Length: 115
Image 1 (cartoon, rainbow, N blue to C red):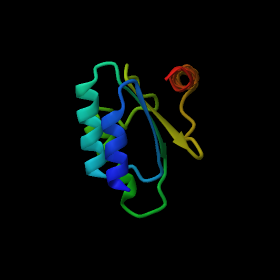
Image 2 (cartoon, rainbow, N blue to C red):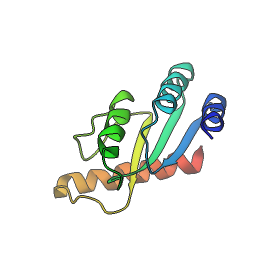
Image 3 (cartoon, helix red, strand yellow):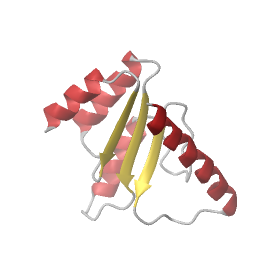
Image 4 (cartoon, one colour):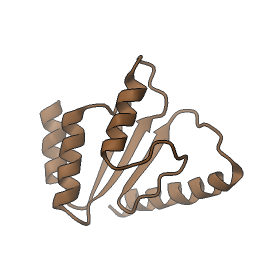
């Protein structure tokens, strides 16, 4: 399965849509970083579980997200080529961030549609 992921990531040129409930694999993160460096127009859409139910996975997932260059302490991640959505219940951020989250989510939906 890992080799299937890696091969698909290597072939991507426009966008990658990755849904992973336990985003904590170093080999996948390394492959994503290489793909983003190789293809300057590549966009990554990542759907993850906000609160993995396996002990320690939250820390491993946060480490993976940080390796992508994203700040996991912010409610809204603003990156020109990487979008992160979470599946499951959301932590309610302040109203100002809620508005940004709607805009951010709409931008991701457009990315997924246009590919």
